Image 1 (tube, rainbow, N blue to C red):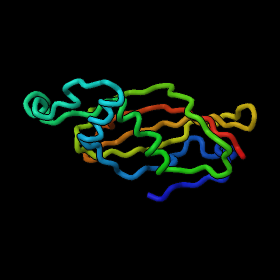
Image 2 (image 1 turned 180 degrees about the vertical axis):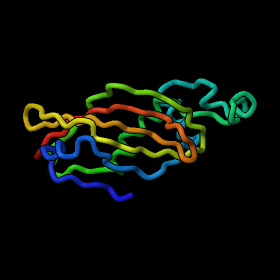
Image 3 (image 1 turned 60 degrees about the vertical axis):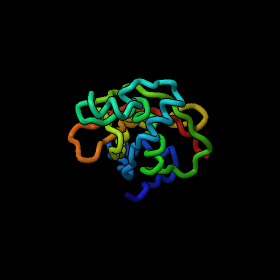
Image 4 (image 1 turned 45 degrees about the vertical axis):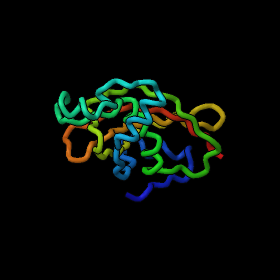
Length: 155
């Protein structure tokens, strides 16, 4: 999908309630899952033991860590949109995160973003609240629904 561009952070209020866009599909490989396990120290077998998963998991595959799925949001959001005339921006956190379906290794996921709020802040900042839904290709239920927040400062 084409990346959506916005002229300036102080114009984001015009888009509240709108879907901002959808990212490209990205594969969640076993290698990516293993790297996440190494980075976080979370080596639970459902994520990293391929042979055991073949026997003991419903689909016979390992599944991605929920927080790995969540951590893909910045990369996927970068594919969705860009705000011009930004001095800098920060991740402000999440209001709500739900992991609604597991992501089997080898699956492809994408993000769908909707702008929920664009609140003015001090020093030329705008606090953006987005609902980001991580969809799994071929599945009805999303992997994750997160209400994320960031602050962008206009140049």
